[in-house]
Image (cartoon, rainbow, N blue to C red; front, side, top):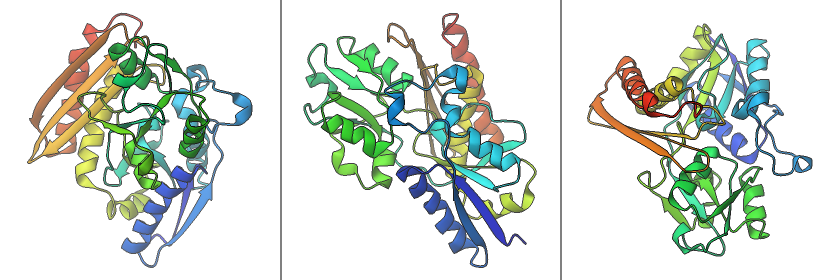
Length: 309
């Protein structure tokens, strides 16, 4: 029987909030389990000296948010890492898995501005701040008259930069704003039909060693089966497309009464081309979820121009 579990996390307010959700759920499910939270600085954490530079794919892209945590898991210095699933690369390091998930929060993006009510209200040349290539590409495909500027930092930092007028508007995940109780900053929620969310958006994923049966068993008590199926389907599509920090991909699965719909979209970074597909089928198992994601990924991939992925 596991007596102590060491959780690794980034130190941002959102990361700590999500980690505490996991820790509290574990303590409720296993009253005798000692849970320790260990804060870890990662390469992806923004520092003012960096300015508004994007995460570089050559240095690991969005995987920089997890690299140091993963190294600590593999070294058996911690037992797991807690991540926003949308920040995780499509493929994990050998020996690590993400098989457990908290119930999904709101998966949608939010339009946030102190000047405008929606993208439709923004005049030509207005600046939208985001470091997400998905958000940039999907935005420019609909509103080519707008400009996009990189905007780094955690959620409160980006809200502060917006308030100071560094940009005219930005995107933020509704889930993060809800978890931080900052939903009052939302100007307008963007429906998935307007802006397809990132793969895994709104989902907290738990990364552990692949063969650590005791740790896996501890998390089985708090993992959401419904969220697991949609996460597996979305990530299966992303893996076929090999979506990275420099590939604007959206994926969103919905599961109801044993049937899943899965929408996937890919765009050129400048918004000049947009490719989308959807699929529906019965999903009651991990294998069916994975297969549905793989099918739509393989169906969409041949339509994409060479070099986009």
